[in-house]
Image 1: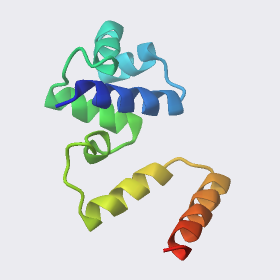
Image 2 (image 1 turned 30 degrees about the vertical axis):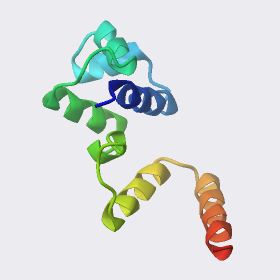
Image 3 (image 1 turned 90 degrees about the vertical axis):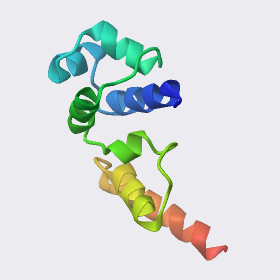
Image 4 (image 1 turned 90 degrees about the horizontal axis):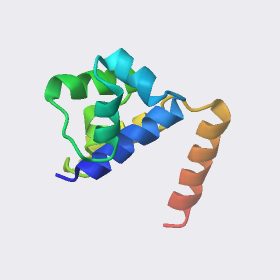
Length: 106
């Protein structure tokens, strides 16, 4: 498993929510150093910590582990839903229009 990819995804979601490492660590119940190590791929997460992180970030486990979960049609829908989560109406409209253009040219 590539812990750097997992850590990178956690970091991206944390930053998207304007959370500091300190705030995420406090809310998840771990040290700031631990969050830093996770984001750099230097440590793995236990299942209970992973669940706390995904719940706080508002993402799903399969979103964070997308590189390791075999994609199915249902998974693809979940990933799209996750990507649209907490986006503005303008961002959602832009994403939908981009998909329409992409699929119109197929």
